[in-house]
Length: 332
Ligand code: NAD
Ligand code: DAU
Image (cartoon, rainbow, N blue to C red; front, side):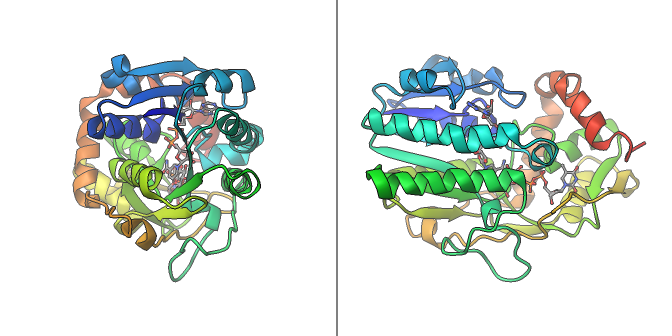
């Protein structure tokens, strides 16, 4: 089998490529990635000699056609993944999630691809104060990030209904683990705690996220790719729901810092209060999460502590300007 993975130089896509090669060492992988600020070749270093890497954007029709030639499957991870950045400027989000996804869908059809998996997010359902989202819950995205992800998902369904392309969609909850760009809550908190810097908590910190370890999500995606029914959506949520403030306090404990580092700052506009996903449908295909949040968090903190050469260039590069823009005034 030959699979095109888009966006695999990022956090989840690179974990997925490793999961595939561990379970099916003979599989051929082609990676198409634009290498935005979040895409890093070193995320694929361990498997570099086992993949074909192409630098290119999913909205570039020629680049996609070339990369997809001869592939049986496509797994589309490529995305602008950070909600706060979408609030500042939505253009790249719409370009990648809507136009780009459409281009990959067209190219998959032209190339006779057998399976197209769209990697999506629980954020397309919006916020839920009580209860749990299922795959039949209505789509009510709140942010430009989730609205454009929902647009991509709808195009995927349209290609199933209109052209008969065999598509599946896998919607994940909040991922954490190794190699996550430090703009996200967990790695931001770990790196700030290790440095003794303030930790920005939005609003009252009581928003709830449903944390899933990145390798568990990667295995769920693979399960859906191999065994999901065409045209269907599958949710993959983590084993726990944790208020943000509690997640931050656990990281402080693991890094030996006290709570005086916590700084409550202005809330994110349109902030979703709670996410909660039912994963019964993907569990029906034999998947279940393996990593408990407490264990996964320990391993994640250890990884960041031991891998300064991975994050140091990020903290001193583009991220620094972003961080100043996002938090500078609030954190003094
Ligand atoms: P990430 O930001 O770490 O990586 C995104 C990757 O996509 C990068 O390598 C980047 O270079 C690449 N990319 C961006 N725009 C591109 C374009 N136009 N063409 C080609 N490549 C492009 O993101 P992530 O956290 O690994 O998320 C991967 C996918 O999983 C996304 O589709 C995201 O919506 C989805 N998702 C993420 C989470 C999460 O908690 N991080 C949860 C559920 C779903
Ligand atoms: O739920 C899945 C989604 O999870 C993915 O689709 C997104 O790609 C991914 O970025 C993530 O979105 P969130 O917005 O939930 O993740 P983030 O790490 O940005 O924020 C997690 C929670 O922590 C959220 O309630 C906002 C809060 N937060 C975040 C940051 C960066 C803070 O309180 N302070 C912060 O500095």
